[in-house]
Length: 470
Image 1: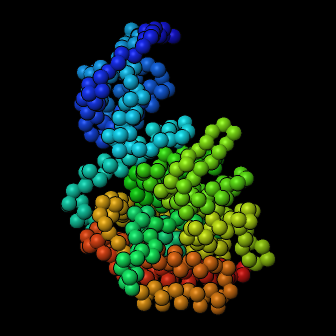
Image 2 (image 1 turned 120 degrees about the vertical axis):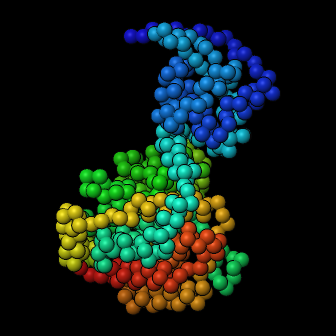
Image 3 (image 1 turned 60 degrees about the horizontal axis):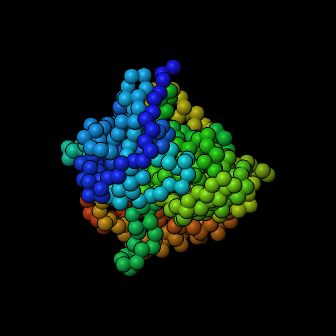
């Protein structure tokens, strides 16, 4: 075992403020340097002292680079404090002041309230950020032209998902893709009053139904990819976070780390989150993207603002010919109302269609030709929309007509559907129209006819499914 010898420093050397600021400006010269310094601070929190080799390996694992080490050695901020196995041990001087400087000048104003959130930020958020930023920084105009040639509007994506899922089940795969475009959260305005916002594109998506109806394939497998099935990823680069195997308490804690970096959370078996008392009220706040605060016996989480979106699935039961949720909390409907929900019923027709798709996939007849350009197209569209002051415009007459049709269909079928589904239809149509943005580069994006028809078709099918007796 290597013997560690530390030098006792009774009092840290004082660094004049002007000298400290000069050193920090020399060390931190880019956003990547900022991430490296944050990662090194976290290493120091875990280990009071470290070797240069250990620090470099840590920084490469967390950020992909270790540019700051050489510059730190040229300042007085990295001091020798001992040795281990013949290698010198180092520590950062004035780590609290470094942290304050990064917060003030580095644009990272968040103060994370728990160790779980801090660990999530260092281990996951920084990795996702690096992946995302590396992609957008290396996009060339030739790349954009190539993506546009394959994806000009939502119609191109519809044609693609039909080639995967067939004409009857294509909406299963289409909605998660539309939801990915939606998280740019572009404001929606009516043509009747272009100055008053009526909605935002961003929505969370819930697939619920009986087991074995294709919910997981349409969400998790297609978005994150499933290598053993030969399914490539279709989801946004650096903006997907998988949440299986964590408790709801852990989820609420680590969600704080994503305040300044919104992602899409993919949550299978969403009902497991409701096994814990008191989760409905917190999840209502999460789905509404409001401020969350939680107190436990050992810690206080937050408060923090939720900025992310969610794609979830959970199972239902069929009882006396009608479906019912497997989530027993009577307030769960309040959470459902805050998401776009799609019901999956285990009918004879659906089983037959799924089996046909399974045979086509097993025979290698499904060509995922648009997977790579699609995820790049949606990621770069998201990037540009967040840089520009874009807005979506809906024609007032179209919105009123669709709303009237939906309200009438709910009454005719006596379906257990909230009128909030009209808002969801608007979000589907608006988000589908965002697909055109990369080709047109117009900051006013009018909802097109194809997007309106898609939204209305989905809602009408959903009303019929909710009203169905099996």
